[in-house]
Length: 563
Ligand SMILES: Cc1cc2nc3c(=O)[nH]c(=O)nc-3n(C[C@H](O)[C@H](O)[C@H](O)COP(=O)(O)OP(=O)(O)OC[C@H]3O[C@@H](n4cnc5c(N)ncnc54)[C@H](O)[C@@H]3O)c2cc1C
Image (tube, rainbow, N blue to C red; front, top):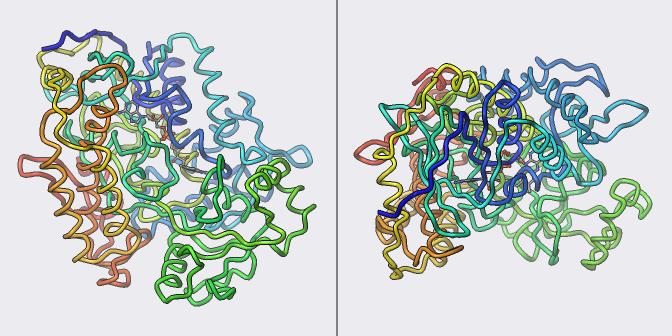
């Protein structure tokens, strides 16, 4: 067995996106010694830094508002499946986090001296704050990085991939990591561990995510014995950029354009079509994400799609000065890509964007397993079957802060480290190179992404899901139980192997939950079971057991209590 480097901390935070950095700050403010680490660079690796615009919060700066109105909209969007305690926590504590970010200098856009709040689909009033121009995520990440840097008690490191949690006497006592620059194993003893690893959209061929979002946290939790909930609900972002070619810009950048300028969604024949699917947009942006995804895909299926298989989004009704007023320098970046919005519409189509499902947590962000907490997109249940625009960054802040505080409290109570090197042996063994090279991991990742996109995408059937589970099983068989690669510095084949190990487990949980839910609700649409069924007003909880993954149904709102 390779000798592992060993470190000890009070609180280990896995993942340095919005949730992880907020958790680290709050844990340190509550007296804990914190190690926040990331497989990528601190504050630059996941979705937070890529997010562009809206952050939902009932500040009431633009129009009178109260968190209970935000909660009502969140529950409605969740189609009856939200874990109400988590949704309430999200809405009630959002104003404090947004104001704290303001005090830290994030730079929320302001109008007439107050923070600007805009309308977004599914919200009953202007509720979304942002940083201009298309700069919300970068500004949020930079602000949190700055606060992390100046907060005493936080140690941080990038390029460290957590491959497994370590359990001692049924409690999480730390983790095992792969140090990517050297290929060496690292063991970490922690009194409390926070999973803040973000979502899973890398499972899909077309996605808005970074390559770090293959669902690591869900797999870590499952293997450690913590249950997941709502895994069938993957949110597809309806208007991801499709054509013409766009370099150096974000594929979901058209969302902010729609918030500010409306835009017209047209089919391949140039007709507005959303009224066919129950919502008359009429140039405004009111269609929720699940309905918009459905409408675009159905138009394409009916042979009325745009040339590349999506829909047109047109801002031709806007003048050059309106566009510049709203998006300033972004218009020049579009021009460099030969896109003039006053002359031509662009093509858009649904892409995998966010995951509603995740690790079951109580309102302290404590999972089913002592010593293990969770934050941000890795948490399941708050958004039910469909997430409202802007709720994801809010949940990263609120759940991150909560998890950090709870983890610090736990660290104070458990005075000694429980970590035992024997409990980490199996994971450390995985990091001992055996120079296996018999599979093409890159091709396997592509095959998985294609299967997930084609058979576990926005529209599902029993046949497609059964086929997907078969392919996932075959890929898992080919993957084997020991990594490929020579174990050297930045061994990408070995990294692929660890990614696939997680992606396949998480893909299986999504497909299995989707197969079992025989109705259509929110982001889960079954073509063979159209329509929502009252008896399916339940959450599905998944656990890993000796026989594989086991699913149970629990009444909505009680998912978090099913521990
Ligand atoms: C392009 C894009 C635009 C978006 N726009 C918006 C928006 O406008 N408004 C909104 O509310 N939401 C938006 N979202 C969603 C929102 O950004 C995310 O849900 C949120 O930022 C997630 O924060 P997080 O901290 O939970 O995870 P992330 O920010 O994704 O951070 C997770 C971190 O964990 C690290 N990590 C993962 N696995 C491991 C491992 N095994 N070991 C070590 N580190 C690991 C990753 O490298 C990453 O840095 C957007 C998402 C995308 C992709």
